[in-house]
Picture 1 (cartoon, rainbow over the protein chains, first blue to last red):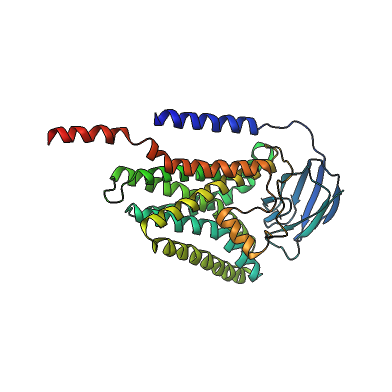
Picture 2: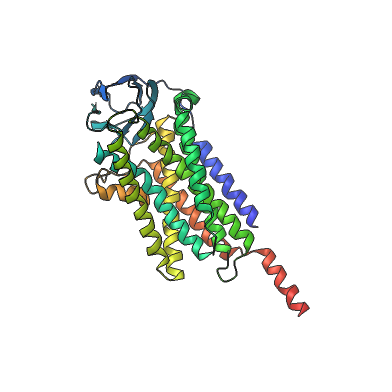
Length: 114
Length: 273
């Protein structure tokens, strides 16, 4: 009886995951951000509202940095001299600040959604 | 440099410290040896160092989704193992603990803490590695040690405040905390899958950032303790509820479906007597 219930729970859990995890082929506009001397370039840019955006972050510094934004609910470590991809949106109009968690005093930026 | 190091290391340490505090309180109840703690800490630390060293390669897996997939995997394992550990503790009789089940609980505790330490440890190592050849390294290390000590102290405080309470209260408190941890882990894993576009992002179901900002100390503590998010998406909320339900279900399942072997053994003993 116990096994049957566990099997059922696992089955529905798997089913839920299978439904939820659906890779999307739709191409998202790409925005390139570079990190140099613990600063973001560009540190401010606009994106259209209600659109999924692909952020391509290139870390030109030899040290790691963490892209973080509480407003965007995003967090990712980018190793020195490497690149990373983060998807954001669709977002409603507004200002979404982001920062480099390892160097928060200098690495600051914001995304303007309009 | 120093305040940032304190905050960053504290944030990373807090989650694992709170988990250790609760699991230690649970293990005291089931009379476990607690040998799992050093094993999980040492093995987790070693694997975290290896992963931090290889993070450049891992990040490129699956079209730059490797880091998120690995962390989401660890979080899902933590959630499911918490549910298994809770189910085990619910079936263990504290007055007469079955060695097999206590050992199984220890293995669960190793897996949970191992995954938590690997997840947070790799970020701490990567952060510190950025300063290793700079003049600020000493300051960052001092700040990091301070942040680590505060995080560890909060974990110890949680442990003693839990064991200070009577059996029933302690059990209820541990269950609530573990259920919230599990929900938090599953919710965070969906966030990572949205970050790599494996899950579709939808508008948040509420925005409580004006009430409790995630950047505030209270917001940070709530995040570490119950996985507080100011703007959660519906999938995140659903994952949170699923995690909480799994753990609470695992706790109450033995009551409604008691062990068959136990039931069968008892009448045989009665006939012998």
